[in-house]
Length: 308
Image 1 (cartoon, rainbow, N blue to C red):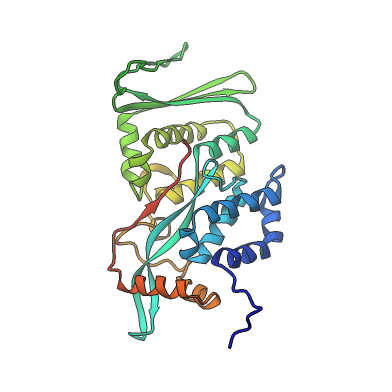
Image 2: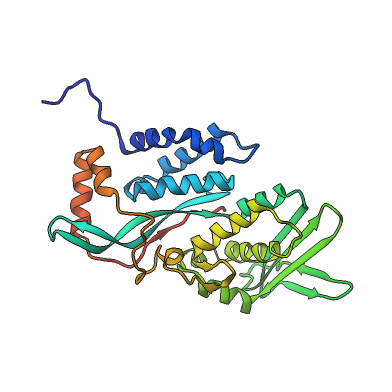
């Protein structure tokens, strides 16, 4: 008979304890100026608001939070997001007594537009960034040469402004120089096609377009910031881009494993859901486990929050 005085921990309480055990490591990763308690509190609030994260692979959830800490971004859905991707991995089957391939929900950290801008400002080179998507009914003109300039007058009518035809970013440097970057539809289509999942682009095409042009423009800025380089690498990995060119699909299985129907297993992460359930046996865990066994293999799912 179980001890009536013993209270079983909820999945969130269990992860909260595991997360706080990494407090010292996280503190070493955070850049100056980002409070440890604020980072951890924000991450736990995001996880508590999205319980599905706790049913995904626990190790991938913890690693995603640690990566966000290293980049100095809050997991608040504005600077960075914690997304769930179904990933094909090799898992052990007690029934078959061997490893089999199965879809496993994994958590992946994704930097957002606000987070990239935050890191750009932290370089000390940028005084102001202005970026926007351009629609077919907008007035837009981009002139290069000795007198480079961008003219953009958004459509103010009652009808829809039409499809996105371009995106631009204007970087005003602290030394007074101005750098302009423009991506037309043909460029955005290439970047979108190279993404490992279309879910984000389908839902937030304007934000993804702005994010793409900011990333491309930042590569030409006169900075050797390791923090910025690392952030762009993490974002390319999350989206499945080749780190050398985001218009190219990633060439390595490790970079494309998440949300890829034919992706091979990755050794970096393993399915730890059975161990998670063993640590927190409950009626709910049994129901979830039986539902997983009865559910056929499906196409990769993605649940992506984005800033409004």
